[in-house]
Image (cartoon, rainbow, N blue to C red; front, side):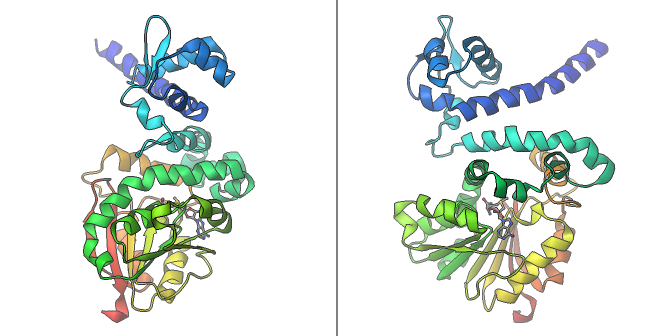
Length: 340
Ligand SMILES: C[S@@+](CC[C@H](N)C(=O)[O-])C[C@H]1O[C@@H](n2cnc3c(N)ncnc32)[C@H](O)[C@@H]1O
């Protein structure tokens, strides 16, 4: 019995990437969008996407084992509660997250053995480029990256607006450093009509996203292209840095924090990061810890509270509040040490 259990467990784990890759391909093809609220026959589905009918059916059967899509005996496919989240316009869509994760990140994981031996980035080893260099060279995939970050960050945006409501009510101007497609700025501005916001990111990210801001807030948002290793704009009340530091090793993270510190006059810094806690780590944090070392810059490692606090203190910041969010991230509200 023990032998069968172990063999079963090993097979199960080794098959998991096949299910994840199937989910990735379903997201890439946009199957959930084509089906929408209807029951669509596999013949029509495969024809409309110009793919092989049998392979598509088998792929959908694999992910239906996990609750994605339902397939009846006559070959009609419908969306399930789970597969609805693969629809592009679902308010909590995860379609682009599946497209990015199951492609670039999975390919990067082919470098795991290399990372294990060297601690250097497996992604860079496989692609011969860092993640951001790769995105610079592949604009279509860079868009997928921006949209995946939007999928991933939406729930955090909602949480920080609630948790840090007083800080936002007391402010006039916010800036999101490495803000990507602007999901955090958008969520905050939707809740606080008196605020204006700036999204600071790489040139191409700002160019791609300037025409995709929602009507309701776009008049209050500016996009500022730049490099957070050089300088960021001065004079904002709240500087947000969300899911940025975990992409960088200690030396780079320290440079980013010092650049921001130089620009803050009276403002506050809000950092949101996946922080490992050693005792009560969720599976998501445990997966993320390994992810950072494999996909991100050479020498990037997961940080616990004391690791991040030492970086923050070194850059001249003092933590005034730290909150664990429901998403598993930790949010730190900071002021410059000299202004305390
Ligand atoms: C992991 S994403 C996080 C995006 C966003 N803060 C969020 O949580 O959804 C990191 C962001 O940092 C930006 N970034 C990377 N290098 C940068 C640089 N040198 N200067 C400015 N932004 C940069 C990327 O373009 C990307 O949008």
